[in-house]
Amino acid sequence: MTKTIFITGGSRGIGAATARMAAMAGYDVAITYASNREAAQGVVRDIEVAGRRGVAIACDTVDADGIKRAFRDFDAAFPRLDAFFNNAGIMGKAGPFIDIATDQLLTVMAINTTGAFVAAQEAARRMAKSRGGPGGAIVNMSSMASKLGGAFEATDYAFSKGGIDTLTIGLAKELAPEGIRVNAVRPGLIYTDIHDSSGIVGRVEKYKDMVPMKRGGSADEVADVVLYLLSDKSSYVTGVLVDVAGGRGL
Image 1 (cartoon, rainbow, N blue to C red):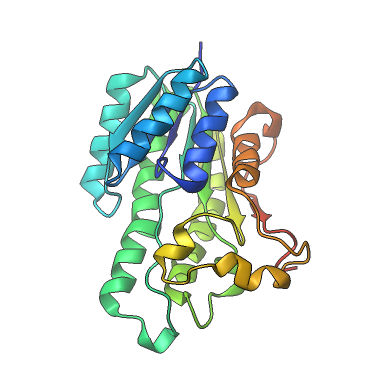
Image 2: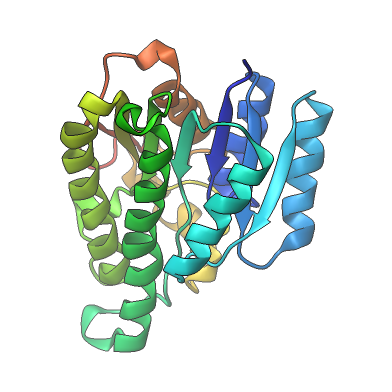
């Protein structure tokens, strides 16, 4: 039976790269998108060109009920869930800690932490062997910000991703008897538009000399790690936070 993967936030950046790579690896792929339907449909076309089935599902991950509806839409399209990339997230407007607006903090936490928690619950309910599921693997999207702190720019974002690290460790322990492995990736300076959305245009170029490898990373380099952690090649790996950061943070 063809394996399926569900990727939240799959219309751009690392999510889109993972979706395309998963199709090349033989998965049927479902992705969610918040607003850019055209970009999501472009990813679906690439999945289909690779010979796999692709589905794009509208979902604003700030809304727990919306996440649950997205999983029901997944159920309507696919017979089972084998792999879940808990990827959707945002950065707020960059700024010093004392100037971060409470509304921004609440939105960042709602999407990056609460939304990811609810999405992981929905995935686990479908995978858990005690509920008739096949087992499977979950990869959570964390960030090197959780390790470095996000000082002067993104302490709210770093705070939210610290929660993802804790969630990953807890779920790895709790879900192992259900046949579910749970790991996380912590990207560093990666060339995606999430940096521009925070108001820091050219952020990777600005800071790349702080990276031991003296360069930013690509979305494909992160996607490679995500797919390894979701695959049977990592069958004895769980509860691991994998830094994909060129040595930054060592």
